[in-house]
Length: 376
Ligand code: C2E
Ligand code: SIN
Ligand code: SIN
Ligand code: FE
Ligand code: FE
Image (cartoon, rainbow, N blue to C red; front, side):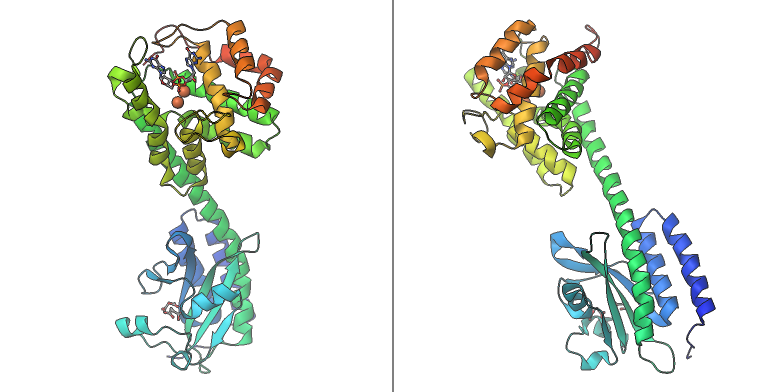
């Protein structure tokens, strides 16, 4: 059942059709299938697959397309691995005569691969993020040509861009889901701290980060993640967390474990945001002079997110009444920050604190707790 090459009119029609379809897809799986369909039609191949890189498992994988189940192979292996590693396209006329071809899959499925064309594609930064691979040319010639290479490259350059935007979108959606479910857990948190505590800490951190000269993007990231600094408190028993009055030495040791626990809860994620959150959870009680916990980190060994959140957190803890202490008047808070500059706190962050105090007080006022019903 041989087919003929497409005319340029037919090609244009295919390209326009698929570009419209692909750019309106939001799910990664469907974009991949459409891209595979487009590649197959354009160059008259029997099958086409879009391969992506799974960095965490050091594998290449392709999703379902053209009768083929998801396949995973080690990074660098097979024809497709070669193309991705070198960034160069590959055309093979007789797969079984080529040592780069991995015939395992054919043996499993009984499919006979003959000709192969593989073209890596790149994201907007120019990094290779995957490859097109088409198998078995269906024309009489039976092999892929330079023209196929040009056509598929065209598809690949477009696919690389649209794929990246879909992947970014997916990343955002996944991140939000993770955060929402994690925040749900905090919702059940038995702490008496008000919901506004985390909001205030977020806004204080943002203001301090900008004042310190961090880029807007970084400040914004910190604002998103700093509310999760105390997430490890979900593991602290109610009797300790809400104890009216001072903690015993033993109870305080337990309390301190909220940093490690928060870090452990969040660190499993590869998502950039949750990784940042895990840093804040772990490091917000470290002290500039090295006397903090859990790791006794010193100076700039403490991530700047941790150093900023420390000031924001203590400012808020002292500003409001806690089960174990009354609210402090502002002059006492200021005195503490002056005394602890260079001891508990990074001097630069304390300077940023005093420089932006009017703004911080405005936030404190705007996000004040309603007394007393707002308490959980
Ligand atoms: P938190 O209430 O959010 O307090 C955060 C941090 O603010 C404290 O970290 C500490 O650095 C500062 N801070 C809070 N209150 C005071 C204070 O009265 N004086 C001074 N100088 N600093 C204060 P820290 O000490 O590592 O405590 C971590 C968490 O342990 C606290 O979070 C709170 O949940 C709990 N905690 C600490 N001390 C007590 C206590 O005496 N009784 C109870 N029930 N909980 C306590
Ligand atoms: C197939 O195997 O036919 C799909 C494309 C590929 O795996 O290279
Ligand atoms: C390869 O690229 O050689 C491995 C995948 C395949 O051809 O089925
Ligand atoms: Fe804490
Ligand atoms: Fe806190």
